[in-house]
Image (cartoon, rainbow, N blue to C red; front, side, top):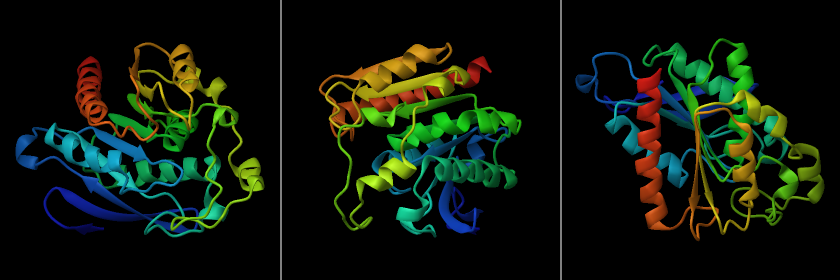
Length: 255
């Protein structure tokens, strides 16, 4: 664990046999009368802790009294592992649980005020992880999900071509590691804020409607008009910032 200044702590922790890299962002202690709530993020399929929404949350959450942990899953960026061998829903669930466990061991955040954030496949990971955390006595207070696929068969664009993040991927990779339908897990979730673009060409908006239909109240679905999978429109990013903070603060006040 390396503290690069008073608010940011670089952390490394094991998930399975792989050492993962993350950063815990804390509010200025002078602004707090007690330990802050913790938000833990899970990035998308080809993402990392450096992804745009992770970076955005690392700035705005500490400014508003929340701690935020961003980390890279196995095989991504600085985290150990092999992208092809270690990318699956099951292993990403293990990673997210390890991230929560290790952040809480630092005793710098409240143990009973945990939120999750997931974008794209990270949102699927959040859905799949929820009950496992509850079984450990770490029930999340809520979650924010962006363009999350509930059923992998609905995904319209599968990144098979190689790039600087991974080699070319055969369709068998997805058939073996990333076939899932999490619809039956949704009933476990509550206090869920959902963002989904109505022009998402990767994960169709039907996934957002499915999540909203099956999760418990309170819940909210924000449809981003003309919004794409990456939330690339500046007005959508501003709306995301405003509504995410509003949702988190409201949920804390209700706790």
